[in-house]
Image (cartoon, rainbow, N blue to C red; front, side, top):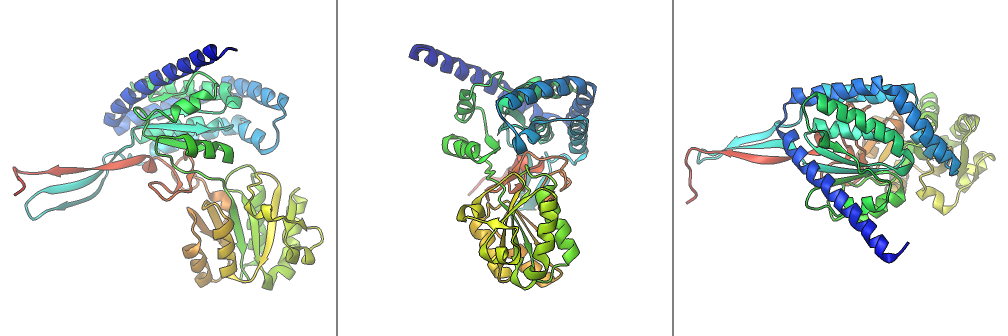
Length: 428
């Protein structure tokens, strides 16, 4: 391939993405003015299309999975790619749950009147056009598209090449729903190419795209944050912790740790490090390791943990900073809640962290001092999910502190403007 041909190909990608951007911006203007009833009708119609075209979705997914397996893909990455009847139904139900939520657009967040008679209101409005870049999960196509529509935004969805066929059918279902409701099909689009340059082009589309939401592995997030000229909702890796305090109920601790690690190891809310108080480690660590190893989990630990249970293999310094997304967990013995908090704040990714304790004051200390988007008391980190929070779905978990933090649902995909009403006032 010649340099001239490369330049031509890049220019074609650039032109294609500009066309996508122009159409998205026009669609966003229509969506911003659409009624809640119209948007909800589109979401219900899209859910119906997902169900009626389930066989087509699963057939496309089978081809994508076979292609991924032929390239050596396995483990958690493959698990996120695979769809079945239940997962397709979950996508359809998620759209219906999003439709059932209150419409965030037009909500008056605050209002007041000035001494001169001006009436000022802060009103929720859409962000505009949202670019979503994600990897293997085809269900993100439905979740992100549905949430953007609910919040009055147009969406440009760039999924991974490994799920290109599956995501294409899901996108078509969403566009069927939009069309049925009289909304522009360009409100949800995906570049019709697997060329990685489409990602680079999307990150430079400052004239058309208002926010970028990356959802994927560390390398994807780093690329987006390094290259984007558009504001980014940070979504770093899910380096989540579960801390077993000295006053934890032993049965509860065992059940929560097992679920937090092993329910689904490949999701960002899976616990990667278990911290356990020295005062109970001698009695409780062994049973916790029993549960984890019986479920097929490799347990790595510090020297203190290994002295208690010989099945624990040595942990390296890197283990405390590793998101395994696999059946591996690291264990560290700590001296009390402050040591646990220090570990989480040093090694965590500001995603999701939990404490198990019967001591309410200790729990509050942990919840207040751990600097993460989601903190939990006596519950599994696997609840780090917009659906579980009652948001219907999520576009991702934001680990940043600007604008959205934690699960990003429809409400988080909005901004606000000030509406000022006067009776002829002029400023002296």
